[in-house]
Image 1 (cartoon, one colour):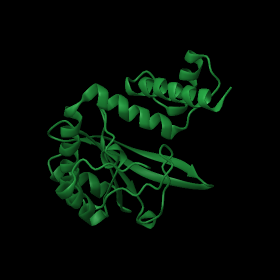
Image 2: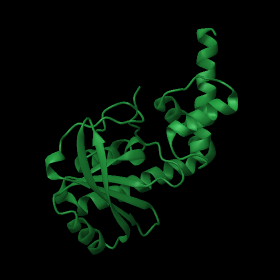
Image 3: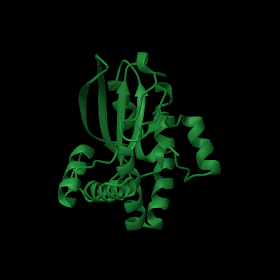
Length: 206
């Protein structure tokens, strides 16, 4: 198979996988790529980045200008929540940081504390509805990392997921498994600057 044909095929599979993920027919990138390749009858698998970029296009085509307005609303709300949590070094991450939201996207914020239950109290005091909480354990390069996830909802019904990690993890570099770059996110001052100068700015690899 020629390089051109392989490139076209990867793009076709990435597009199909993106559609499967966007419309909720698959939940994980790996399964979506395998399913798309099977449906098309090929043995080439695109990268997660290729699928993510295609899913961004699907979201734009499906949602139109309402998506842009919602991104600004979600970033504005994220800033308010981050200011509530200022003592815990909050960082906006996920699709609201990237600028790649789709229908159903949550506002994802990482905080750093050794007393995660304090976060619940702060959110409730700020008028947010806490829906559920859960501990998550993952293994990264031989190390076991625990995080406390708090799922909440804003008055405008935007989903909110706060990931509480230990203070010792603050400032440590993390790599994004989807885009392949560093998960930098936005701190309060950085988000304020984005909202002031370019509220729809995107943070994806070139």
